[in-house]
Image (cartoon, rainbow, N blue to C red; front, top):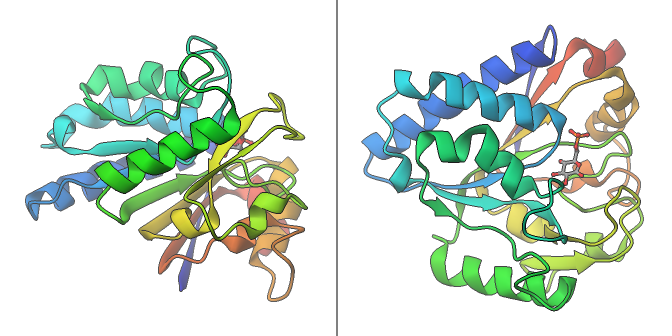
Length: 239
Ligand SMILES: O=C1O[C@H](COP(=O)(O)O)[C@@H](O)[C@H](O)[C@H]1O
């Protein structure tokens, strides 16, 4: 695994940099004749990134109907709940750019519970995914969680599923669905989007030579190419 770190001045700078890199990456993939699979994340900095993508989309020759979007995790709530990562991403950029291949994790309207939603999403990814994400974007919580894989939770050790459900997320809402590490790591590239001083300790643990995935789930990300886009506050002393 290679790990690159880009330390930018603040969250806006992270959003602008990631958006430009994303647009260039998608244009290049399509130039090669590919239809990339991309896993999106929820979270505060992701929303800034998504809005920057919408603002600059017209500068790049991208056919948005030839990118397949997925979600790394989702809150298991009503389809129209503002807590849905999907709805936020649609509002922030997917609808504006005209994305048509948007694979949402089932809501409470479509699945009987988190396990059912996880099983349905796993089946969808198996049948409609290419088998590898071109890009997975991930936020990281102050506790080191990624997607909805939280410290000390059994989902961290699941190697039998593509997606798993949980009903006891320490961050509300409690019912969620998450891709597993095995699924998230089937990616040509993983980009972490991390900003804010409250993330500095978790960032330090994630980058440390030693440490456990149980304490800091971000350490479980081990795709071939991992890039951290962080602001100075999240980088803390490690700049
Ligand atoms: O709940 C979630 O939180 C994380 C991190 O969000 P942030 O606001 O601290 O950046 C996010 O990665 C995840 O997708 C989301 O469901």
